[in-house]
Image 1 (cartoon, rainbow, N blue to C red):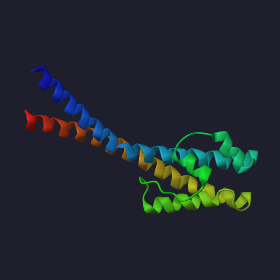
Image 2 (image 1 turned 90 degrees about the vertical axis):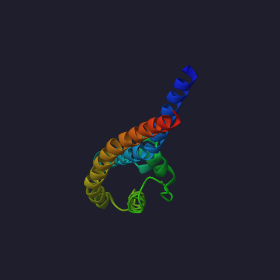
Image 3 (image 1 turned 90 degrees about the horizontal axis):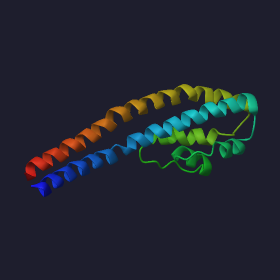
Image 4 (image 1 turned 180 degrees about the vertical axis):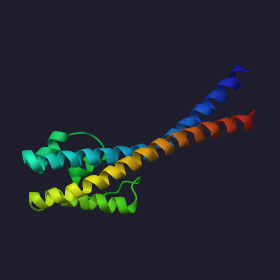
Length: 150
């Protein structure tokens, strides 16, 4: 009897964990756009006031995450949780960093500020909605599996 209850609890916990893992792409997407938006704000401040080099700014930030890894290598954007259009926009964004005079960069990154804010809000809402949904679906799948076994 106890073994059966323990097995049922483990099945439900495992399925819930699988739901949590499936929601990871939404959490990663939310974190990516939050980092990109924060960096954009900081870079605009640097362009306006401090005027340090881009390399100094990147070294100072030194945070972990997918966006900061992209800043370091500035290569192709191959993140699975981004759509094709978002990958293209991100590649264009990274290509514009440090290119041109400060006035044109201020204009470009100021225009990107609202778009990044929208993407950040959208990804936060999606992570909140779908992240919880996947965990609940995992829980329900675990309960359904337990019912089928018992």
